[in-house]
Image 1 (cartoon, one colour):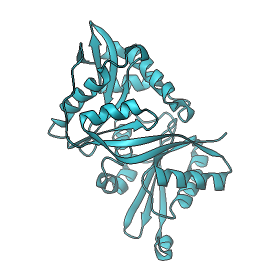
Image 2 (cartoon, one colour):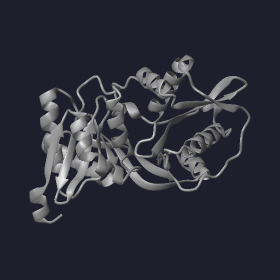
Image 3 (cartoon, one colour):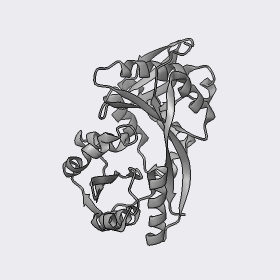
Length: 294
């Protein structure tokens, strides 16, 4: 970014989701997959499912308008969008100022690799807190749906009676991907209740026994995000998750209000990367999750 552009860059902060939405919706919806989680959280907070601690929102104005966005919804990490060059340091300054004022803490940073790493480096430089990468995620978008083999059993919608199972599996999923390293206070039962209340979870069953879970999020700017996906270790390698994700994908992409389906995979898990590509998902971007502190 040129020095002229740097001079006009400004970071705004608010705790008002409507003020934030009014500023950033066009920016977020210009890249509806890469910025899906940021966009989805606006709907989540509007629906009354926001964090118990104060939520905070920021956006970066550049020479041509909004050029970046970020939010903090404790206990989740700071989530950032792609950012212009030179934006990381002023964003970190604005984040530290607001979080100190409202009494919240930042335990981690998530976002597109270059932007998240720039924010983490700026945080370490200004706050003295070390940072370390937790995992790298691939953003996948559905390019062209391909049917996959059907194992024994079938899909059913998860309901209120499944809350104990879904909460247990979400907790197991979080532990397996080390999510609690940056989301230490996550309430897995609350997450399960929310996904069940919204009818956004499906189970694969064999002889009446659930063997796999696939969640999905309501459309945000025409994009459905699949996840979490979890199969207990003893039920793996039977094709349950692959078929379940395929069926959920087919159902969602057929909706008139849905234009795209997407999901994230851990680059350290070659199995998940492989099975989703068999369905027609292709990688389109790299995101990272970074923990702050020792």
